[in-house]
Length: 386
Image 1: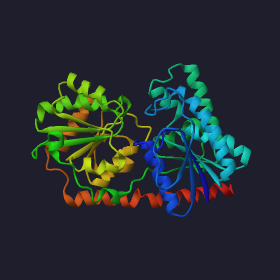
Image 2: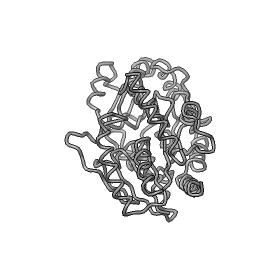
Image 3: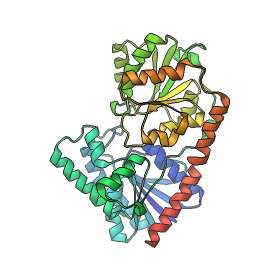
C-alpha cells in the first residue's frame, strides 16, 4: 500500500508524538508498504521514510508544545504541502495524526477520493481547555463543532487511550464499528543491550536510590508536581535522588527545584535523544510518569517497562492499560500522594529479576511495533472496502 502520513508537528523530535508516528511508519515499511510523511519544518530525518516539510514560519519555536491557535498558520502551510505531495504520490490511504492532520487529510481525501484515518491522541477541545489555551466557552463550543466534523468525516478512527475512546462515543457519537484502540508501541530490542552512563556523571553514589523521569518538562506533564513531591521524599529518604531528562526549559525547572529546596538531590540531564534513553534508564532504580491528564496516553511508560523498571504513576485507565499489575499506582492527584508512591518504589528491595522479565515480556507481546503495523494494515484495508 501507499500511505500518506500527515504529522502536524515538528518531526522527528524526542517527544511522545514523534515516537508514536515513527514506530508506526517503521513497522509499516518493514511490512513492505510505502510511507511518505508530511510535517512541519522543524525536526530530524528518519531512517525509514521520506519527510516532506512545510516551510518554517519566522519566529516559530519548533519546541512549542501542545495545541495552540497560532499553529493554524502552520497547518495551512502543511495543507498545501500535503496536497501537492498527495497529487504526486497518489496514496491508497491518508493517515492523519491529531485532529489537525485528519482535517487536512479529509480535504485532500475529498479531492482525490481517498479514505482518511484519524489517529486521535486525546480530544482537541479538551486539550485546548486543559492547557489553558482556550478558556472562552463560545470558542470551545466552536472547536468542539470542528472536532465533531472531523470525527464524522474520517473513514475510521484509532486512539491510544481508553478515555479518548469513551469520549469519542459519548460526546461525538462515534459508533464502535468505526473506531478501535491502537496502543503506543516500543521496540524492546533497543533496550536490551544498553550500557549505563557512569553514576558519577550526575554525582550519584552506588548507595543512592535514583528515580528517573524522561519526557517533556511542562506543568501539563506533571513535572511541577514531581518536584514538589521530591521535597517530601527528601525529608523521609535522604538517599533518594532524581534524574530528570528532557526539555525544553531545564533552566526554568532547575530554578524551581532550588526554590523548593531540592536542588541538591535533583539532576537535570537536558534533552535526551530517544536512541540514548536506555543509557539514562540504566542509572535508575525506579521511574515516574506523573502526567496529570487521564484522557491521553503516557508513552514513556512503555520505555520504562521495556527496561524493566518499577513505574510510579497516577491511577488512570491509560496507565493501567499499559502497566497492568506492574504499576505503583497513586490514587490521588497531588504532590503528597505522588511522594508516597515514590517512597514505595525506592524504599523497598525493588523489583526482582523474574518480575522485570515478565514486565518486558508483556511489552513484547502486547506493545510490539510489528503487531501494531499489521493491525493498521487490516484497518486500512477495511477502510477501502467501506
